[in-house]
Length: 191
Image (cartoon, one colour):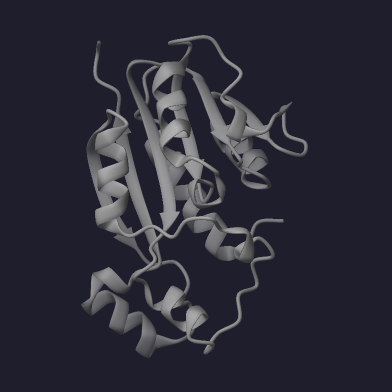
């Protein structure tokens, strides 16, 4: 089941999916979001999960597709769980066609949500929260992206958690670095 916040993320991804030329899209670690994407998009979306999905595969061991065979990749809240994000991003580059795009969403470690969780003021409802290996902020993520050989086409910090608390909603509106999610559109340049 997708939460209200999850639907906000999915709709943001769907809007970007329509800008990708070609139809073959990988949704890496998409979980429940995969069925939402398939229901609301005309693209051929292939979900790869460690348990289930269209293809069952451990993404720490590479991406099981040929070189330059994929038009776009969705990576939503996955990168922080992988053993080697750099090797994973290099694998994404390998399977993407020239000018292919990645839609990347990851938690912002400097956000108000993360601060509240780390300092014990808020419990995480995410069962996988404690399985994170990495915490990303803008500077670290930009460095990873550049080292892996991608261009950043779009970057945005966005808020999706403060539905009822208007004071916190105002705070993250005034101070964008406190927003909980980092949203990227990356492009693989022609080689």
